[in-house]
Length: 436
Image (cartoon, one colour):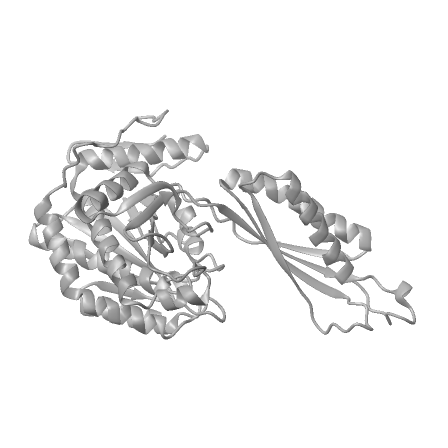
């Protein structure tokens, strides 16, 4: 079957909860383990670890998942702080993937709330496990502990090494500022990290400046060129960066300067185009100053392509049962970018954002948000979102008609960008088909 256009699914005016008795099981399980989940979150919050250094979080979370009857693989796929926890009930059934992030930010700790994201993944997994067992539904849960979201691209490495193979869908959520009981299911920006180094030649800044090639001048010209370029780029595009040096002194012309840039746009295709324009600015600066340029392109983080059917189910259930209002225009990554974007081009997935109470001007990547991510109110908001996502995940496993719609969305997505995905299959009891 070849999907050529998106189906026109409209918002259900008379939404009915899928198997309310299963939702009750999910609620009971999560209410019962809430204190355990909160303690896990606080432990991780109070031991902040940077990208690829999440050893305490790795050990704490894997020990807990082992104690809950999951099969745990530590140091998954040769990533020291990645891990995998699985549970399977019965024979056959679909596989639901879940992600737990763990890393903190330099100097300001868990200012992006990854302690909360960690327990969302754990909570979803525990709740679906309870539902599969109590209602005797065959299926499998795969929870990945994903390191280094903050600039390290941990999920990109896991994708490359096959960490998401076999999943039929994948779920996670991200906290941010906003009004009480609100969430967002919009896309996010793609991002291209770039590091550029300029190497020149030192000289006495007063005695013989003509003997030098000034690496700081190269960085200054590059920065100025990009600043001018910003006037001619789309309002939805972003280019931002910093300058670093070593052993600088005002009476020595610098022979080395380093710049780290991030290029963002609403889609990865737009980001690729914008990247080429920025590279010309960087190259021109080296040419103008007669310095040597070394360019390093980081991994391109795709935009979040929220699966429309999964997002609609999240929105409908959250509103009807818990009064959570989800805005599809509010970005799923709180205005930034995430390596989960690449996951959404690999497997049907959603990454909604949700609000926790914060102080004014206390959004993500501030010390005020670090404090907010530790509060009881933040954990209560997280509990609600975990219940909603757990039920969405259960429906992926158990509802064949629902999953057909989910799969059609990603088939269209793959086709629209020319991706070929030979192993994307819709599994039901009676038929299977591929996106071609």
